[in-house]
Image 1 (cartoon, chains in turn green, yellow):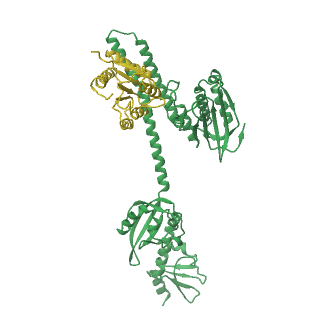
Image 2: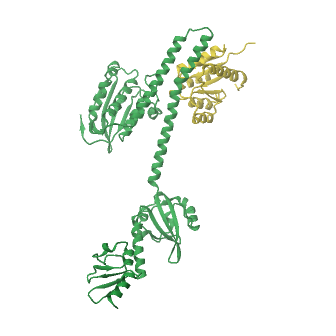
Image 3: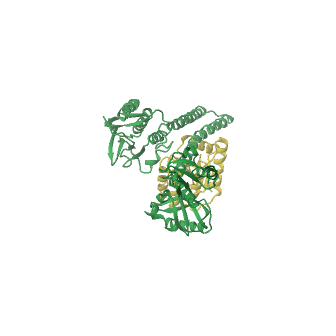
Length: 425
Length: 144
């Protein structure tokens, strides 16, 4: 065969072919070979033939070069290798099932169920499914249903997790196999649960706010009507008092609206600074409420407090509100005392603000944090203080709770904050 | 024949709202007596005294309750009334600013006789108070 005839056949052959040096380095290739590997001719020349997933046939060309051709089963080997690589690259679990058993799968699917690939192959699908989902899954498999549908999986260790499944029936080696893609819904469901909780909180908030804004409105409209009725009857004995009630109710509404705005702002904490000494923050708060402390004759003991990362202004608000709250609910205590300090509990450091005031009955330990919830409706303020405190603390990644041994036993507010290890006095 | 004076036990923590209801009653030249209490605890305590036969705490013909009260709220007072055999048949009407479904459902689940959202208009409030008195202390019949 002449060189040109060979060249013609080589270039035009539908069968992938390449020519290499004795050391398997590619010096020429045809278009089919380039297509097979998905790389350009220029890209491939100079590269080494070993290391590909191809099953190749080769023969000596006599000039020290070798001719490589790729039979159809070699092409199949490549596409399977490529498929396997793709399968491993997805985030989903992929499984090939046949006769109700796992015939093949990717590493993600095995990991989702806590098995190795070797262990999971051959396992019956029912064994990977929670009892309550077995009927559903069996039905989907039996009817070749393509989904998507959700069910509960059971891991090797017996733990359960929610999954979403999509399936396709494909022809493979003359028989119908089921290819299943599985997505772990654990994180998805956690987010949904959190969103539901937030929505619930928001509904509760709107409910409370609408009641508290409507109440002064009833007063305003009611007394306006009463004044009109009195004037119609030629009486004006209580008009001044009624006007004062109307003015007070309007002030109350203004105060409520201002506090609402303040509460919504608490969610947008400003600049976060590292290592804010809470001792300094508490001292600043004590200065801000010095007037109320003097009037009520209350003493404040400030112990060693840690430093944290946070918004200094907002943290000052936390201590200011807690101290004001302690002063407000001192009752008839002859020696009002407020203690601020920190203590360790297991892995956590807790900051506490403790008073020896009137204390709290158990049902109120949680209720007092709701917006506009007040222990004594006649006490000053709108009842926003502790909701504000909780919001700020939660923004800092912490929690706050109230503890009390009951009425007459004082109250302790406990803040669990993500702390930095240094303690300062 | 003397007409027995009817007694309404009214629990309301908002002084302004209580004043409005009392004035509405006065305006209707109503002979009904009203005892105004400010929270749930005081209401439960009054009813306990009444049940024990205390002459200073006569049995009310109607309990008019606000829903949101400091301490024990209106529903808790309602629960207490319904759970006490001697009090269970006293009609209870909730008078509140809340028109929320959850409050209405909760009240009826605890066997309230009627649920009324506080009218904001004084003339309407006056008419409501008159209707309330007429219906519950004139037409309505309860077991003693």
